[in-house]
Amino acid sequence: MAEREDIHGCIVHKELHYSVEDHTWVRPNDDGTVTVGMTDIAQGLAGPILHARIKKVGTVRKKGRPIATVESSKWVGPVKLPVDGTIAVVNETVASDPQVINRSPYTKGWLVRIQPDNLDEDLAQMVTGQAAVDAYRERIETEGLTCAHVADFED
Amino acid sequence: MPIRVVDAGEVSGLRSQAAYHGVARAFEPTTPNTIVVLTPGDAHVCIGFHQRVAGEVDLAYCRREGLPVVRREIGGGTVLLDRDQLFVQWIFHPSSLPRQIGQRFALFTAPMIAAFREFGIRAEYVPANDVQVDGRKISGTGAGAVCEAEIVVGNFLFDFDHERMARVLDFPDDTFRRNYREGLYRYMTTMRRELGKAPGRERVKSVYLKYCAEALGETLVSGEFSARELEAMEATESRFATREWLHREGGLERPGRKIHADVWVYQGTESTAPGNIRTTVRLRHDTIDAITFDCAFPVQESGALRRLESELRHVRLAHEPVAAAVDRSKIHLGPGGLDRGDVIRAVLGAGAPASSIVHP
Image (cartoon, rainbow over all chains, first blue to last red; front, side, top):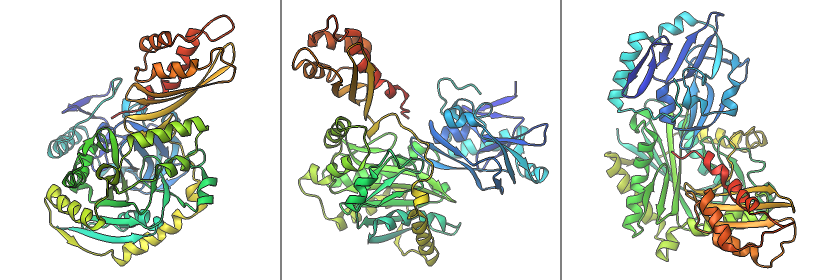
């Protein structure tokens, strides 16, 4: 079980690496790829997600460029890639069940696996562990953020 | 930094959509928060970013009527815009708007509501993003992020062509269309309908902007689009005019048709011993607002279905109240005919997708 921190109702998994600005997370995998998803805060801000369109496998993207667009009942916007790389795998579950992102943002609701180009460099610009908790605590408290969770939230 | 207000006047339908996209695409850290007010000079249909145009819009009708169909880059459903509306668009830095989307809509709609009220219309904010007058929608809003900007848009309806809206959409059959059209008349209103006569456009603009300054606590300064923004608008127009953009893969499937946040129309077919029953139901919250049965077989008692429809009106969509209404209707149910359970299943089945609608 991942070590998790509850910050005013928003969950942060300490083993993940975060782009706090874009509300995305990265999990390095043993095969050299990284898994990328939206944070609990991102899903809470978006609200119940009705649709997610993810770029295709093989798409090459620079950090900061969108890898997906998500639409909730209130808002549509991009999910920005936190590392340079190529989409290796797309989470097909998200297409048929976009609210998996709301239920399980860090586990079942991941978006893509990326073959990164400069992982060490990119991770160095992200925060993890206690630093991530501290960064999110500051952001959550400064901006008065809350994370609405669906009834069957499981992360 | 003061907020720039660009009064773009009356522009083409395509430009009315391209305007906020262009400002967002050209957005830089030094770009001031911008409010655009404009009038779509010609009627057009605008679909949401993730919608599939085929099956959503009656393209043949739009072609015959000369109605352009445009896909925007923010979400939501199909809208019909024309010169009887004032289109207001906020293109802001993300840090200048509340991060919580509900608070963002509350902020965006506050000056609209204040303006409506100044004109004597008792408008109120209905979460997540409607402005309503006694349960009738008077303004639609939408939001999204494009490049580095956050966008929120909405409209003042001076008048609205309900008939045309009901024709623009693609429906499975005429019953569905009729039910939707009736819903539009009942649950969408306009300034003209509320006041008998719509106020002048310039007056609405000035009252609205006065309340924008108040709600945002900032000075508003009249400005123009930059050359870079105009260039981005032209590029957006070129992209939006392509067949590829309009017909790009959709994906956002809704199980019914929305009239406003609380009113939806659904349809379902129940297979029964004598044949299929197609049920079209308009729900307001979880209550049947209107219902129509079309049976693919002769019904023994003349008028029975209409009596059943009447009994079901204003009944909550749940097994017990529906069953009680079926019993009250005294519809003839017997050997070889409809089974009581068939009718109940037909009603509950038609409205079942309502439970999958995500209400914020």
